Image (cartoon, rainbow, N blue to C red; front, side):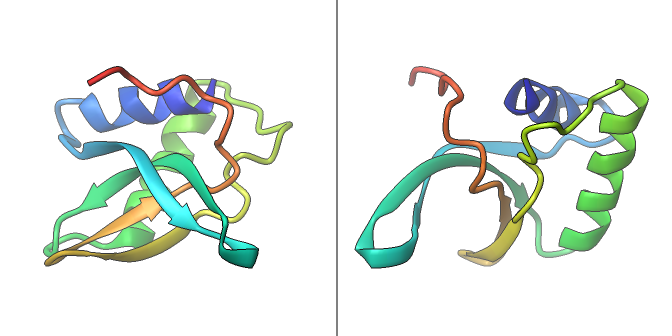
Length: 96
C-alpha cells in the first residue's frame, strides 16, 4: 500500500523526512478528508522530494493502479511545507 511505502521512504537513513499522519485537508463543499503527508523542511524542495519518492516507488515495483499519487499537492506548514496525497483516504492511520 502506498501509505506504507511513503512511511518507509521517509524513514530511509538518507532521507529522514517526517510523515504527518492524519493530515486534515479541506476539499469541495466544505468537507474535509484525512490523509498523510511528508513534511518538507524549508531548506528542501517539494518537487525534489516528489521526484525522489517516485524513484523510490519505481525501485520497489509499486504500480499506481489506484492513482493514489494523482493529485499530490503542497501547502505551507508553519515555516516548512507539506506534500500530501488527497487520493490516499482508505489507509489505516497509525494510532497516537
